[in-house]
Amino acid sequence: MHPASYRAVLFDLDGTLLQVQMHNFIPQYISAFHAYCRDLTSHQRLQTAMRAGIHLLLETEDGARTNQQRLFDFVAAQLELDVPLLGQRYADFLASDYEFLAPAIESLPLANALVNICTRAKIPVVLATNPVFPRQLIEARCRWAGVDLAAFDLVTSLENSCYCKPQLGYFYALAAHLGVEPQDCLMVGNDTSHDLAAGETGMTTWLVDTWIMVRKGLNFTPHFRGNHQQLYDFLHLHLPAKQDEI
Image: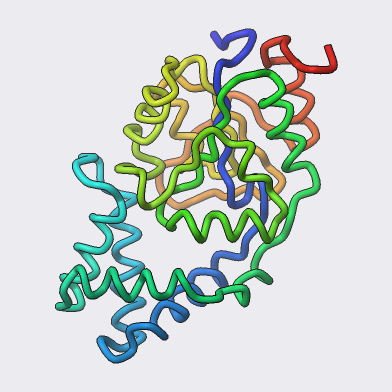
């Protein structure tokens, strides 16, 4: 039984509000970071440690530390480096110009319209991107794709999150933060594992199948699915009747 209207909407980012070629983006991202710590470790060791660290975030359920703390504790241990030193080099990287990553991003014309129909309904809207990247790289991806980040009430990032999708703690924590029950939330995403896991908490799930992602292992069946225009039409019908044009 799904609500006639929703009290909060959670949007995935990559593959949902923009398209990104992650097979290009992640190696370039790690290579750019390596330019700031090439005196500390080899490119291969850093790449191996960073990728293993991201997988660790996806698999960890305890929520005891932020994703940033967990990632850098792990990577520093793998590379036999001090955490503050590694963290400072990463901060130096984030302060640099990484516009060369922009070509990996493809914009979606309907992205802002999808978010705006929710904000006009006067309900919280979350950019529920998997928080394995820092806020600055999320901001950059949104800027390159023309997504209005200011429209979101909350953006999950490496710094402010203690869970990742598909861990159920991620979705429960968001509902608690918003002050709503999971069953009153709609999770929108393109990933049949990471995004649709929200359904296990009682959230309604919408699978955007324009750029669908099906992973090996456990996948979930969405409550609803369709392309971006069909999602827009669905939101128009299932959000509170507080929109400006009504």
